[in-house]
Picture (tube, rainbow, N blue to C red):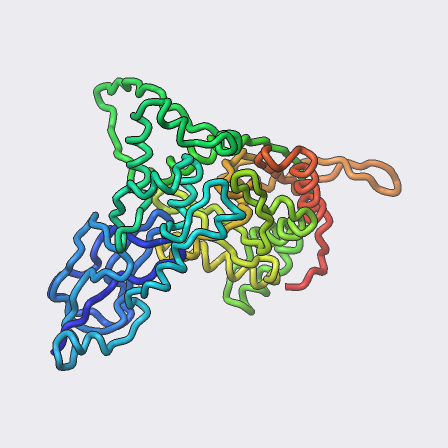
Length: 439
């Protein structure tokens, strides 16, 4: 028999550690190849770690709520073979520890001389998240070097830099101001001021429910997004009668042919993608005083989870997918999101987001723009209403399928004309949907 070290696998760009949520097996249990053995959580997503070999778990090295680094052993398995630990080294899997060049490639800042108003030399390896926080807080390279990193090979983690920012806020105001150049002060929004915590009275019978890890992350991201981006929202009501008719005509055939449900979402995404192609400056991000125009169109899809939390899986390169391809991608992501099967990379890289508030019976909503995107569209419930139609014989009143859409956008770079015209183009594509569209 031989021992095999189960390592925490690589989980996508910028993700260097994860927290153990729960073990699905105990010490002494037999596991089979590809069995999910442990649930982990990153600041992006919850997911499972499968074992690449069959064997018996003889020791769990990382307990619940403990943090493991990418490439670090989290358990030891007893497997068939001889030679002790050398046998484990012969088993080649995707969970092997990343080498120095891989770590550097993951954490190296993106062209700091052109995309950042705070420059960092090659002496520091920063994940995109840590780099973003450093830029937002105007933390210089010399100041970063004073932070003791707790990550792999002494890397600075998100927790390290947030702790530093918290302590930094207790330093004299004059010292903090001297660290920022006039250019930095002009291009970076001021930090949110912390209001004194108010005392909340708890009456008899009230229940105190601690936030879970994901709810804390959502809360943090929402506050940050509202602080960074000045939100403006435009609304429009769209006649989607043709869309409803087309789906009703094709859904049974599509499910029989593909084994997939045909929802309205791929139609909405298709219309949004076409509108983004018409107005590519909606598919951008802001970095300091620079606007980064995205080449790829990656659509984030806000998805409600069974526990009431929210996650946003991403349809990569949505402009390259047909309606059928979009339907399959959306169904796959939604299923894996609700069953905690998403990979960290499934929630990264969105350039624009759609939120279907109509699935909850809501007519409209004003969603918060996920950072670093600059716009998000909310789709309301489809409702039958009387509407005035123009015909060659004059105006008539008919029952139509109507739906509200709202478009929230970042007024730093998206003005009302751009945000409104983009919304109008989505409206036009849906309202004039061709009943003969193939899928």
